[in-house]
Amino acid sequence: MAYYADVEEQYGELQEVPSEHQMLERLVEALGYHVQDSVNWALIQALKPFTQPLSNFAKREFLGESSQQPRLQAGDSGDVLGLKLQRSSGTSSAEILSQMATSVLRDHAYGGYLPPQTSSSNPLQSSSHSSYHDPFSSKSDSDDLQADPHPRKKQRKMKHSTPEENSDFPIQNLPYGVFSTRDEPRRRIGVAIGQFILDLSLVKHLFQGPFLSKHQDVFDQPSLNNFMGLGHGAWKEARAVLQRLLSATEPTLRDDAALRQRAFVPQTSATMHLPADIGDYTDFYSSRDHATNVGIMFRGKENALMPNWLHLPVGYHGRASSVVVSDTPIRRPMGQMRPDDAKPPVFGVCKLLDIELEMAFFAGPGNALGEPIPISKAEEHIFGMVLMNDWSARDIQKWEYVPLGPFLGKSFGTTISPWVVPMEALMPFVLPNAVQDPRPLPYLCDDRPYTFDINLVVSIQGKEMSTPATLCKSNFKYMYWTMKQQLAHHTSNGCNIRPGDLLASGTISGPDEGNFGSMLELSWKGTKVIDLGNGHTRKFLQDGDEVVITGFCQGDGYRVGFGRCAGKVLPAISS
Image (cartoon, rainbow, N blue to C red; front, side):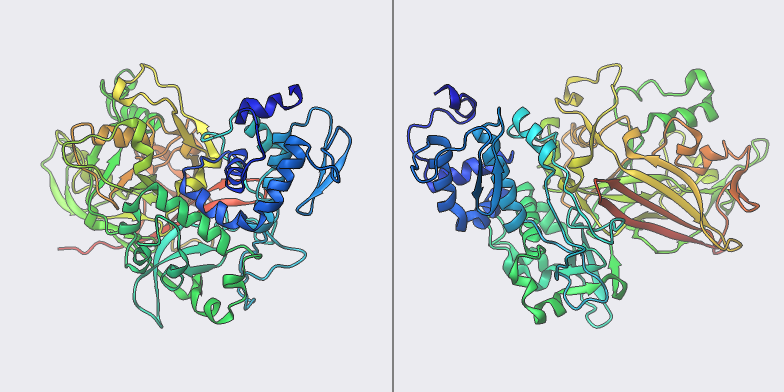
């Protein structure tokens, strides 16, 4: 039995031919999923037609009990479910099974997707030159599977090959949003796919899994709050169903022209709304580079960081009512300020209007009042991420923020992108988090401290500019405190979080000047001009300036994007 040692180590000694159900479980395990996870329900449903061939393969491959089709030896080849297998020396049965499982999933569960083209009447129609191929990278995946049969940190990257490689919304993304149209002004939930929105209110009956079969109405709501509150099991199940429905080999949508016509809405025909009813909004201050820069400006290099900054994720309670969706204009605020320290304060128009490049996450299931969320459970309460611009009135903020922190300098407007990218779509882009020194207190210590490689760009276009100019480029990986730490700290005193609450990162700045995420830093408190090219400069925002934040994770031939977070500055309304 030495030949099967590698298999026995993973699955135990095989005394008899596995049952069909056991084969399905092992098939799923070979792909690195947990059998109890809801995603496997969808996988098993998709693979049921192939259980007998799988059992036959197990009998032949694991036990060699077929005289007509002997077990593959080194150098032999075989054909299982249309997959040509080549056994080379050292290739284990488990690896062969993994190859077959990958092929089955590619061809029958997640494969064949072609992002919709606006000129096509069938968003799911495949073509020979542009289709969704090979969801899993076989070489790297095989390595991952051998190293860790249940990888959580090593999520496999999906490949995509279409004319829309730079689209923010391939099948690997599937972000959720709330939209309406002129013909149907009712707000409802959709998923962005290519240039289209799939209206989930029209396909809710297709979610038949154990988590969603009794909660299909969550997709017929004017906000995502109820869906957010269902938790990880429902989110993973929904994602698996959507990827299956959007594959070119799945006939449900592909072959129903009438349903497609109603269910797929061009994004250009839709009006986007806030994705959730935001009950509470908290803004953190978690970029060490940003905190250091601001500290140097106002307190000097020796006192750049406050004594508590390296020990806890500093945050403040923001104003949820003034969080707006992308492309909502922002009115320049009025406020009390003290521009001259030798004179009394004045009330007037903000002159130092700024942007803050941020990201934020929406909370999922809440916690009961008085019951903290431990950091080991924090990711179960994080639904997905959006881009954010936390507009800031620096002159108002400077005068008011001591001793209780920001108030009117922040509460006049915060812009977020409309599409919430689910955390599962971001897992292929995990990076180790920065080393935290000193080591945080135990309640903030995470066994798996990770961040994400999310590229961020801020552009600005003024009334006098014919094209936008890049203001800065940064990356979410520069954050010091993680989202899990932010949530664990936020609830450590028993504060209760509710589905749809918004928690923001704080300004995202990197180590270099081009990575600074605010004009306060780029102009170094207004002491130098920011060169925008073609003779255009800024220190702070002018009326008519439009600021656009974009962000994306770059995969192998595809990108997971966030859309845009945009807003234009309107003149103040003088009293």
